[in-house]
Length: 400
Image 1 (cartoon, rainbow, N blue to C red):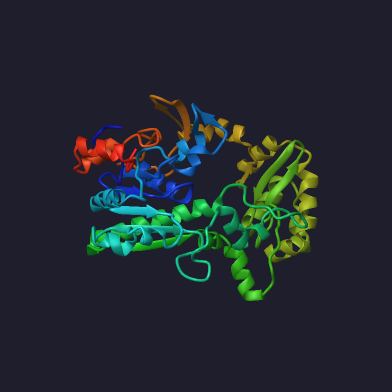
Image 2 (cartoon, one colour):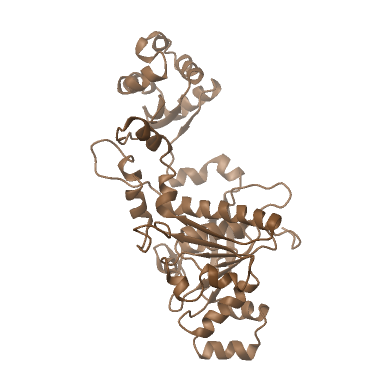
């Protein structure tokens, strides 16, 4: 990529005081799209995920490295008043600030929205918390697992009559990061139109609840508590993993036309005439019998054979991959979803590539994740501090 085009958000300046996942995932996406992201880290270790693992590479967490590419790192001691003044100077030139401290912490430090609005009236300030900044749980610490449990997600994940199961990825954290991202961009559009800043707050609990679309709306209407269904769909069938001769296959036939194509593709036209499966409500009512009928046929061929047959007949289907299979898939390879970055001190690492593909100003992975405090001096020089002042800050352990 040319130096003239670093992405669609080139020129946007973000100060990211968050750590672990939700906030860094948000700022990673902003950085991939070209924003300048300054990652502000605490002394004595920085972002907690720097030490999370294995796997590690040259004592650096691989997970941290993927989440923090395209960013710069500065370490600031917020316990020193000079550290607070440095933060305010960074904010003065910033468009966005992201933080995920426990509710009230930034205010006590003199770095709350009302404080920083006096420094930069157009600042977009995004607060990420476990439960929101108001209400009886406002000051509780929040983690993905807790949010998954309290949102109802764990009650509907897994198979019936088994122990509670969380979603296989930290879905509350990741969705909170995406809500933060979309909210920041909406606030930025509003600022361009109306020349005003904004305080945004997003929470893990609410972002997890947002995923319970079918389950919550069904409960609102019927009062019935939904149960886990394995891979099956809440309101359509067949839409689930089904067993073939050599493993499982996902089959998606949620509407009548797909159902008819499925029956014709697997040569089970008899199912079309069966009143138990005549329409979607009937198929839902008899989903367990239907599963047995379909698997009786699907067990006669391999997964790949059925995918080929179903694809030719316009029936949505696909394999259930493990990670090795994901990254060997020709579509994933073609779309450049595995990208290498090389750090002069850490070496080469593989990263998940960018998701949105822009035609004119494409997103990209430009720089690897920073070492702790790698850019402290550079950042302060850009914000008007002299080398003498910076050396004194280092000596006094205000930055590192």
